[in-house]
Amino acid sequence: MKTIQLKSRPEGKPTLSNFEFVEEDKSLTISDGEILLEAAYVSVDPYLRGRMNDAKSYVPPFKLNEPVHSGVVAKVLESKNEKFQVGDYVSGMLNWSRQQVSDGEGLNKVDSEKAPLSTYLGVLGMTGLTAYLGFTEIGKPKEGETIVVSGAAGAVGSVVGQIAKILGLRVIGIAGTDEKIEMLKSKFGFDEGINYNTTKDMKSAIAEAAPDGVDVYFDNVGGPISDAVLFSINRFARIIICGAISVYNETEIPKSISVQPFLIKNSALMQGFIVSNYAEKFPEAIQKLSGWLAEEKLTYTETIVDGFDNIPQAFIDLFEGKNKGKMIVKI
Ligand code: NDP
Image 1 (cartoon, protein in one colour):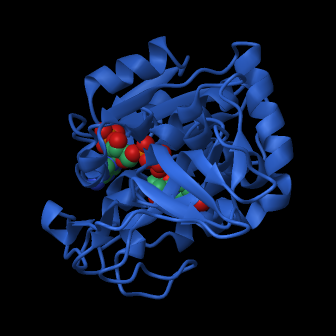
Image 2: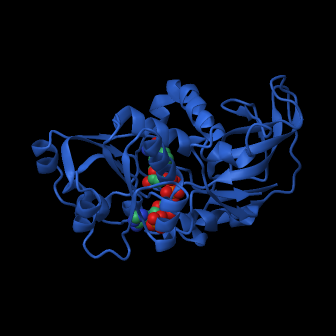
Image 3: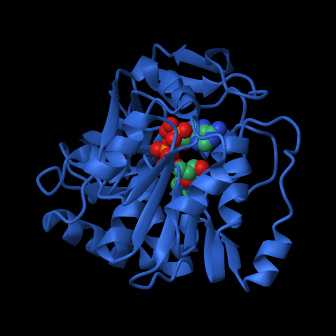
């Protein structure tokens, strides 16, 4: 049984040395009410970086020398739990282990006939829910408005932009390579794209791409990119603070412009968002997302990395922008 544990807390950018592969010889046995699971797909997510710090947050930090866990789709190999049959696939928060025993608590059955298994970690999983609920609940979009999405070519951002197009908004995406910008326009139907790595003056580029101003900003990255967007917000703009990947690896508190004057003069709303706060709306959101997928109004892309041993590197690569769409490891 192979497991990946957190060996040390990253200082700055995570490295492979922060993780340890632990192999235990003993075979796993299950008791009444339990199931034996084999991992099929493992989700790596930027938010896991926060859990690697020893700091108070909305979820407790990972403990050292214990397995890291994240969203996993796994196959039921043995079952002494009447809710699960051998051969079922389940999804939920599970350890970075090839095999593990679970009591089934918090696991949902997923259907590989209805959708590819990996999508339950992406467009039909946590990142799809984040996109839909963050955008609709806080963004309160209206047809004809303009939205800017940062981290636009990633799992959450690419879905936000497409939902915005479905709802009739003008969509501007910010991402880190020309190839990603091209994908935003050709695959996901964004109206405009800005490569923040090659654009010297982000403030002017955003103003140019949004001549009528920005009504909704879906923020996945924080930092200077988000500062630049603030200069273009309209009156009553809504700003969804979903993620801040540009600062997750900072060791000192980053300098940022003061947001208050922008919010005051525009009567704008800026609100932090955590997807788990909206659990009662998950069924409605999944129904919407699956409906749009079936109608081919919504599509998705995934970066699938092969092999259990590559989970830590896939996680680290998120901070280098190596993924397009959802980063997933196939076991
Ligand atoms: P992504 O698929 O977007 O992957 C991360 C992307 O971030 C990379 O591909 C890279 O793209 C970009 N990135 C990396 N470093 C930087 C940087 N320094 N500045 C700007 N962009 C950078 O991840 P997710 O879609 O899973 O998550 C997106 C954001 O949403 C994250 O911040 C995450 O923490 C947050 N999130 C929040 C949730 C919530 O409930 N609040 C739930 C899920 C996610 P590029 O090439 O464009 O730089």
